[in-house]
Image 1: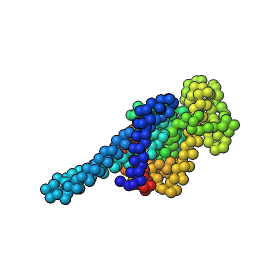
Image 2: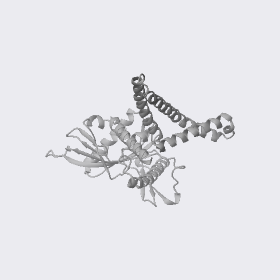
Image 3: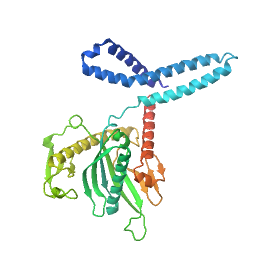
Image 4: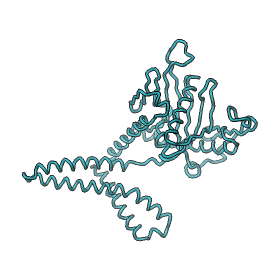
Length: 360
């Protein structure tokens, strides 16, 4: 184990002893907020410290077994014990490194999902509709809630743009690597010559913010316009100016919401999406700076990056970031995304482990 990692673990073990002393003495209960904070910290540190204690015991077992190697009568048994201790140390070390990886504070947040048609005209809009259905079906499989906030439908079907809020356990942790360019290759129904066409859509997945804590929007820097909503929604939708367009003047970001039943509801939704977009832009700027010193293929969040191709004639889906190709396009388009998501998460964890090792 690298000394830098061992130093971190020793520090955590020392901190756990300190927390045990404070919480055991009762002095922390004088401040209820501080007591809760320390209790949460203790719960986070204790499993890692226990694992480190196991590692140190395995290290001691290895040393004892090696000492026995000098005894001819004990050599065979000692070799077995050395091998067992080595395997145990290796497994514990890998698990300890995983426990030390930085946690993404957004992983448990709900998200705003935006799917936009790109190059390809009507075919792109149709594909945007299919992508949105794919994510909706995935959400259903995981018992998440999907709420459409705004939808601009295309004439021949699908969407020019659709924005939805997805709420549930660990939504961002599962969808955060979906942002980027999604390309489709297939023969459109309107293609008489049977030629394969290529079109594209962009997907953005942004963690929902607590607008009061995460992003402060100056009301003087926001222009709010109301207009009459269009599209499906019942008779009332065309009788009132309930749709809301919010423009953030410093950044030029524009959000429209028209699916709510009232102007007040649409305004609240639009401001929530705006806050998420502002925070997302700030985080992507930070990630770009990190990527300039270390290539992070999975979590770059670059919207212009082509991340995945859906080839219908060949029945395959290819994620270009990790060179993953799966020949089960029908299942994936029906929301069976776990194989893709798990592979991306595993690769991202490997990147973090490599960064941790380099840091030592």
